[in-house]
Length: 287
Ligand code: ATP
Ligand code: MG
Image (cartoon, rainbow, N blue to C red):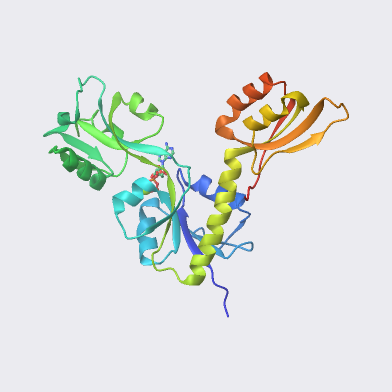
């Protein structure tokens, strides 16, 4: 009997590649390169990795050539293949937006009526313009969309924006946000039960890594007189551990706090007399 594996498609080289590979490593899945550069497998987990252009991933997953894939939401939406979104991965964040030359006196989306817009995302744009009741000419190009207005190819563009620096250096400004995007774990809709189980194991590991990233382990010394109040600020996963110190007026507290609340929490517990605060990254977190 051959051991069941899942085949996962990830971007071969591009903005999602490194983070996709890093996610495997953090999940304890080390890859061994297969023959050529198209595939890799792992001794740690029943997985086979297929390296592809990101545009092709939805189709491969829909067809079942790959069982699952990691790809941007923008690409998933543009290709509208019949696949499941198994998990949102929280990296590769960007947005799809309309932009026009800086000098344009832009008021609203009706500006695009009768205009020419260059994009690599014609379907998402078309759907957006229909919803807004705007008739514009969509000019599909596959790359360097941002130069289109400058060379007289289009009046505006519809493209990926993250920091906005590409727009800026091409004398463009963002005028309409159309969708936000992040990397998704997508899955074939007809996975066998065995494959679905492997995928769920992978998702379990991914969640443990993501939770760990969002939280920090904190150790601090606190005056006993403020213990109740401090514990209210850092309630922990179940409840914090409190260890007595030799000095009767003090205890040591260990807990877990959310990264996003970090500075606010530190400030509050300092006000309550906490000292010797150590903040430690967590590698995995299973609740
Ligand atoms: P391929 O050669 O695989 O077709 P590509 O050039 O189409 O690659 P990339 O530029 O590598 O694609 O971007 C891949 C995905 O990463 C995008 O579809 C998007 O979801 C996401 N992405 C794009 N730009 C950024 C950014 N600046 N920051 C974060 N994520 C981004
Ligand atoms: Mg692509």
